[in-house]
Length: 347
Image (cartoon, rainbow, N blue to C red):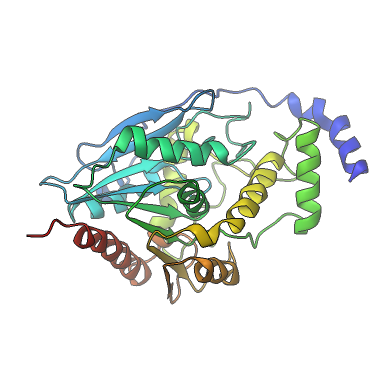
């Protein structure tokens, strides 16, 4: 690891030459040409920003049903996703009377970037994501009991959601969709990668990526090619939005991101027993991004968690083919609907 640290110091000036770019937050994305209507913004979609203290600005969006709403959900996105990835799901939930809020993660989507190279997934800590989630609920959504609130975290968003609940976030229900409680795809063995990432952080070089980590490419793989979904149409949606909007593009993570991920993973594991929020964990049995044993272990440690595994489902369940996405969406709507019934006023 000391040799690795020395190598980082030697190559840092070379990397720094390509580290200049825009870090500003971004809203009002341009729709990709030819994209199906179901993947476009729901009616009345609006953008906003949330910032806590000196933390980076994070973008969020919101849409409401055409009639009187009965419930609401806050969606926390996975790595590399923007709110645009979720427009189809937002439309489906709006049609069921649900107000949909989507909070993008720090350093991705339309949120402010932390690295000079905009397409690098860089953070120093997941704590600002957790803090922004709590602020989003307390300051922006401000639930008052009339519209029960469910928090839905997808992939790494599930880890953020669970940590926020551990730190006091009040929600009526928690849906963990393919939560990433460990990573199956690593560029190096875990111990070596984590040690290198933490060395890079000590040397203030955590913005660097592991050598060979890919940046965003116009001809790069879409979500289907990455093995995140088996659906060719939904699998092309995120790449289409990123192609049309350079500010949304995301490549591989930085070394600092890996250090931050394993820091919050360790912290979350220590406080699982204190989570009392009713939790539904939805996962596909063909997910190659995060191992099933980690998901099952977390669900078992929670006080009130029900796990459902979807046959043939990969990691991006919200982008899967209808035979998988249909049951996933039905389970999400059921979880949201149960909070409504549980909190309905008695006659």
